[in-house]
Length: 163
Image (cartoon, rainbow, N blue to C red):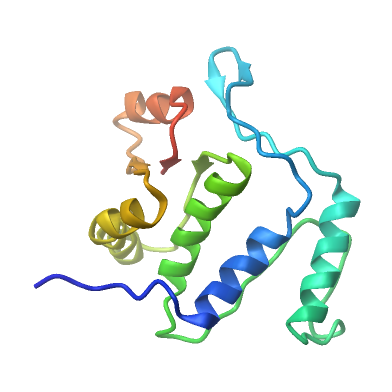
């Protein structure tokens, strides 16, 4: 059995666009900027511009600013109901951030082994779907403290990488 993913669900696209829109105005940057041979994400945008973008997104999505608990911190939350495709949305957001801004390093933290296994499975079954949408593949590394060479590989890779 093969899953078919619908790439055009409006509420998912709106969520993805809202996150990507936070960084509107940032220039596309390849991770060629090295620090001791480690490739890093480089995002050239001011905090003030990100907060301005946030306010614009809140208004566009008709989100009451009081309920959004606005602050001057760069800490954002996307809330979605159960069963709406949150995992798909944040994975696709990774590809969009890579495409639009050149961000290439992403670390997903999860609260349990079961959720980690679910995320890894979703990454596996969406590999071709995202390759078809973005013409690129993500290198997926499962963190294992006994295999630090994989973590090192994540740090030194200049490709789209998810750990």
